[in-house]
Length: 327
Image 1 (tube, rainbow, N blue to C red):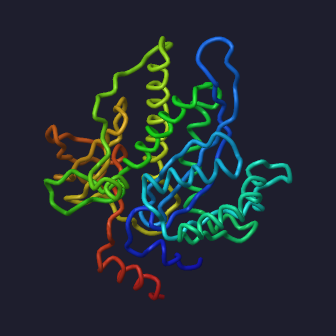
Image 2: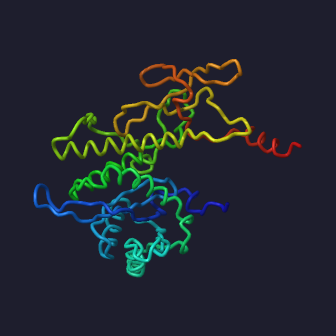
Image 3: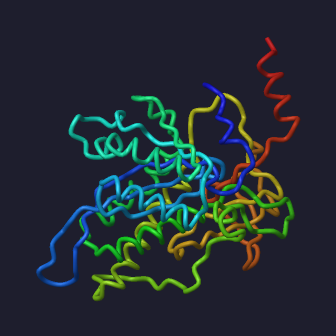
């Protein structure tokens, strides 16, 4: 496995180096009520290569003009990036793939526009999607659930834009790592910190929507809550992977910041806690722990909490290397 590119590990502002890709199509209605006609719209995903923050834009069609206007909206809201990485179009499967055609036809006009704006536009090699794995992962995180909840919803352009922006906030609210080692600090670092220097939280509490929504406004709220519930479960499952092991892995320790697996949480609400006591079994393995939360201490099983990634201790790295050298 090769080393990460320098743009992935250098300290920079949000979206200083950006990856871009398309997803879709999504069906939208040209108006509300009877007599409306459905047309196609597409999702344009911008991913910050350093912080993994995500920006979602709705594109009305796959023309070169629409692509450049989408890029202008992104630059106006997030700032001008120094370099943009993109697929070159030929790595899309199928000779008649319209996503591949638009990127091939837009390559030179977009490159000219980027050159005029002092943006370095780079295309990855053909038939090598692994070169763009970071934005391919961002496309999957957004598209996988959006296609299932809004694929046939027939929303208007305004409603689809609202749903994409709210989904963007959900993706950028995910916990990455503890902000500090302070046992009283329950706040994790999120991609939202790189965008607005504070966590992304809902200003208005979301109300549960049950049954068939009567109004289109409630329908958008229902779609947002469905996206939140689907993506939250998938994200926590990735934090708590279970694979075959041959050596002891790091377990929960005192003072660790953990993400609690709770049901029926409102969008953008993550329940965090600090480990204050461990209950070891007869075999010396901890399976239950006391967690200090904002509402007080609670007792939870270890399989109901997710440990956020932390820096490994120095002795752990030396121990693993010694284990490899021992006969």
